Length: 138
Image 1 (cartoon, rainbow, N blue to C red):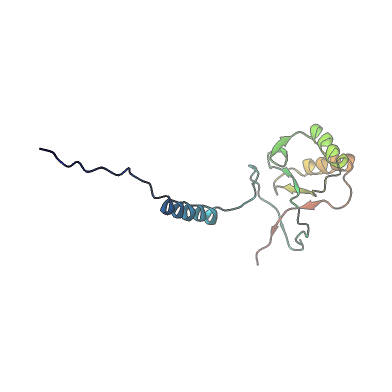
Image 2: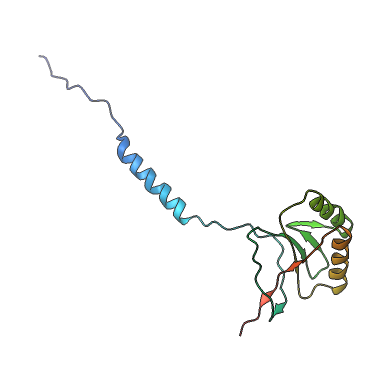
């Protein structure tokens, strides 16, 4: 007796439908991704101002932050006042197009703010120094 053995087909993966699924997943990931700039790890309470105006420069400024506990940060890196002057001089020498902005907590010691401004002037920073502050809510 001879039994008929049916030949099995090789299993196939339907690629076209997989491509559709991957495209939908890619679109979902792109749409749900938020594009934010990195915020430094320093949290401070900014002083308020009634007469402050928004900056019209499109470039991201180099943030010079002074915290209430008397620490100074250049962007997100902690820096001493002695090391601040060479770092700023290097920026001035390289003719960096990024503006410099002072970001001091309202409880930061005033003496530290003045020393930082003196270091900036000694390092050759000329012109206006932007300062970040909270806008007063009416």
